[in-house]
Image 1 (tube, rainbow, N blue to C red):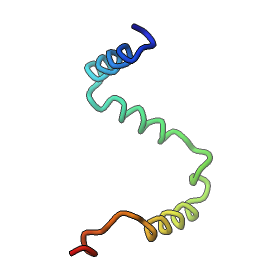
Image 2: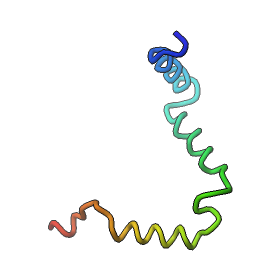
Image 3: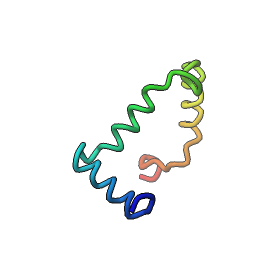
Image 4: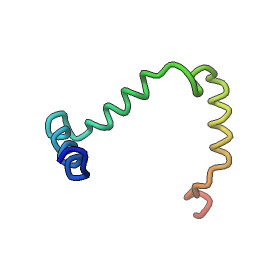
Length: 67
């Protein structure tokens, strides 16, 4: 069953049973925290400016506007 969709589902179920339901969230978070190069890591001010710009042009609707 190795390499099939069913095998992957069985492996995922085993991992969750052994290590907890948040197993994949934990390994994903640890991988994201280990990186120290590239992206916005080198320039925090640039990251802040980009986040502010993205927040201003957000396409998500606000409940305050619709009320």
